[in-house]
Image (cartoon, rainbow, N blue to C red; front, side, top):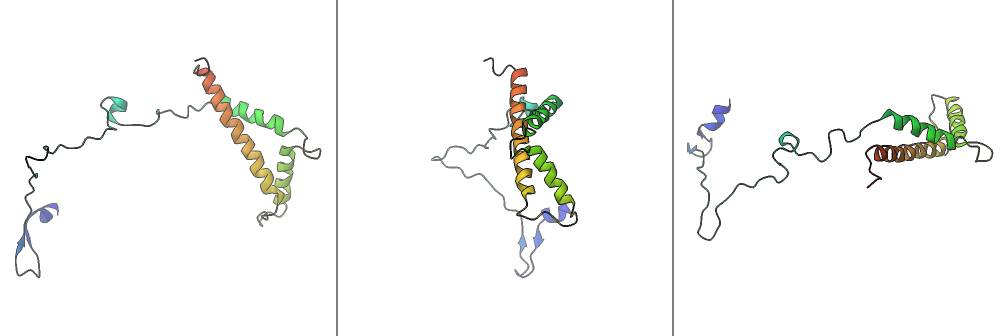
Length: 145
């Protein structure tokens, strides 16, 4: 199939003239520098086996200690009864139970569930992020420099 496209063919409607490959020659002039093929500056020989990578292969450096301590580190302060004698975790879990009471119907947009959901998870993710920075920074002696 590929050879059919590479050979000259007759184009219908041009009176039987054949279309052949155009011989391309590099344009040269005494005013222009010789043409060079542009090299990709991102391809550095020897780096990552000839491939360019922005990050290390194990950029996340996942550690379950961070997840465990981060979860405990968020559950402890979010369980302090600071909102009208109730904790953020208690309010969040209570709103889950309230919404599950009418399960097939989704929570209303005005439900307190959304406020507790976003607040609780935002705090958790911030705690996990700082935990990852602190734990990995300490194990890799980042703060000693």
